[in-house]
Length: 498
Image (cartoon, rainbow, N blue to C red; front, side, top):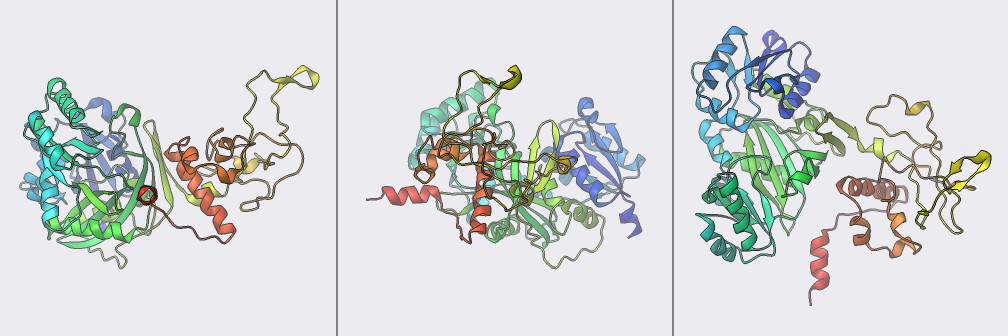
C-alpha cells in the first residue's frame, strides 16, 4: 500500500493534450505520486506537465522500446502509461524484460481493436450493434460497395486505421467517395485498399471508458460529445476530441460498451474507450475501441462522480485490490469545455442554469448610427418598442469576481424570473446563447409560439443548442412540465409517410 501511495509513474507522450490531461487527473488524485514524462518531440516536451521529462526516440524508431526500458530502470519507474495507439501496440507486444509494471490489454486484443473493419466484423459476429461496413479493394470497388449499401443518401468513408477521424468523410454519392479516396492515394500516399464504406450514423455521439482486471469490470463511465475541436479544418465535421461534452447516465449505452469489451477479450485488463453513435433507429452502435489508453476527454470522467478513473487505473496497475460496489459511476450533467489553447474546464449545469434568462426584443436592433444622448455622448437605443418583452437586469457585483466556471446570478437570484418594469436594458446573453442568437430574436415581430424549431436551431451552433436545451428544461421544471426526448428525424419520417 505504501508503495502505491508513493509510486513513480512514467507517462509516454508527455506534452501532448491527452498526456497532459491524464497528468492533471493523476495529480488531483494523489500529490505523493512522482510523475515523469517522455516524448520524441522536444517542442512537445516544453509543454509537458510532468515533474521531469525525457527525450526518447519516436514509436516508429527501432530504439523506442529499448530507450523506455533504460529510462524505467534509471528512474526507478513503478508503472509505465502510454497515451497513444502506436505506443500501446508496441508495448503490448513487448511485455517481457521490464523492470516496471505495464497494465495493458493483450497484444492480440490491441491489434483487433486498432483495425476498424476487422473489429466491426468481429463485434457483428458476437451480436454487438455496429454500422454495416464494407472493405474496399481499390477505387474501382467503390461503386459496387455503394450499391451493396443500398445507394444511401449518405455513407461514411474512412480509413481502417488511425484516430481523430483521419481520412473520414460523409459522402452522398459513390463519385464523391472515389474522389476523396483518390486524393488520399495521390497526395497522402494512403492506398485505396485501406478505406471502408459504411452505414452513416446520424444520432448522438457517446464515449464510454471502462477499467478491467482479468475479465472483471472494475469501473465504467460515459459522456456525450456535443461539439468538436477543429471542425473548421476537418471535412468530416467530427472528431474524437470534443470541444463540448457532458456526462450522461445512459445504461443502454454502457451495456453495449460492456458487451463490446467482453466480445473482444473475455479476460480483458487495462483501460478501454468505446466510441458509439446512434443509427437512424436510435440504437447505439460501436464505431471504434481505443484499447490500452485513456480518452482525450478523461478529465470529465476523472473529476466527476465518486471515483477518479486515472487514479483507479494506477491502483490496479500497481497490484492493489480495488473493489467498487457501483461499477457504473454515473454523474450526469457535468460539462467539459475545451479549446486548443487552454486546459479543459469542468462545470455543472447548475452553474449555467442559475443565470437569469433575458428575452431579446422581437425587433432587430437598428443598423443606423447611434443617437446622441445627454452631454454629447453617443448611446445605443435601449428603449424597447411597445409590446416588447422587458428583460432582467444583471448586477455585476462582487459575486462575479473569482468564480471560475460559474455564471453569476441576477439580482433576484436563481429561478426568480419576474420581469422588471420600466426602461429596457441590453440583454446580457453572451454566456448562454450569444447576442442575437436567442430564439426570441428570430421571431421578428411574430408570436414566439409560431417560430419554427428549424428556424431557431439553424441559427445556433452546438454550444447554443445545448444552452437552449438547459434553459428549456429549467423553465419546464419551474412550471411542473415533464419533457421527453423526441428523435427529430424519426418524427419527420412519420410526418412525411403517406
